[in-house]
Amino acid sequence: MSLFERVAPTPQDFDDPVLVAQMDGWIDAGGGGATALAHLLSVIPTEPLVRFDNDTLVDYRARRPTMRIADGVNVGLNWPEIELRAGHDRTGRAVLVLHGPEPDFHWHTFTDAVLDLARELGVSILCGLGAFPAPVPHTRPVRLAATAGNRRLADLVGFVSGTIEVPTGIGGALESHFHAAGIDAVGLWARVPHYVAAMPYPAAAAALLETLVEVTGLEIDVRDLHAAAALTDARIDELIANSEEHAALVQQLETTVDTTEAAPIDPTTLPSGDELAAELERFLRGEL
Image (cartoon, rainbow, N blue to C red; front, top):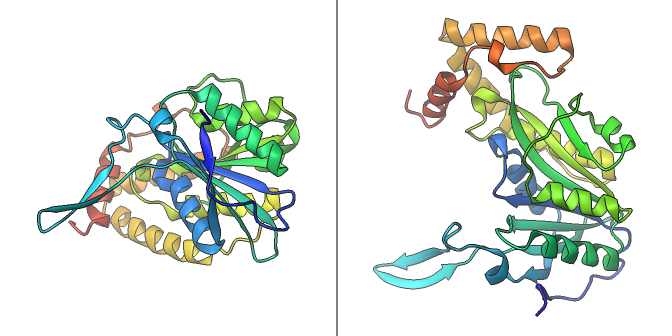
């Protein structure tokens, strides 16, 4: 039994496509990756090309379908779906988008299937989108860190220095699989201020898509994201201005980042951002 089914033919003039992957279920501070994906799909028209066998890949007890109820009547279920969509940007550049819940099972089989499709469609590069909490201030531009298959891509995007071992999501497995097969692969990770990691942070999404443009040549308009980011930053500034403790936290982060050029720093040397994050959540919900 195939792990996926085709739901549409490959579009015409579909040459040298970029594959963008963002799957729910792993770290995504500030919703950076998810927001970037949603914006990408809103500005580049795409159609479903492949749907995966979700009964094989998804644990519905962990990712339950939602039920629509109208006046007590069950009018249908919305099932989580993993799909590959295809389209072109305004310049005609081909793009594929892999999205949906991160598989709960059969990661090796899934990455094999995605790689087979990528080979068939002539994918030139895989780019993953994500974001992680970092000891950085919201008053500085969002910087990215790469997890790349080669030094050229790591140098282009920027990276966290040193050698570390961390758990990974399906994006890391896809990157490794593509790199081993000789296809460029890079994970784009936005560094989100740790004190706003639990709430929407559109500046991260804007930075992710701008770097995606730099790496792939896709045309993506991110002006709406920058406008949303400016509004969010202004509201955060308003809250911080009313707290000496929070202002001191941000100032210390600014000093550290400015003197180290955003190099990795030890978050244990900084005041905890938990209290500020909780108050910011309440503030942005209009409760303060």
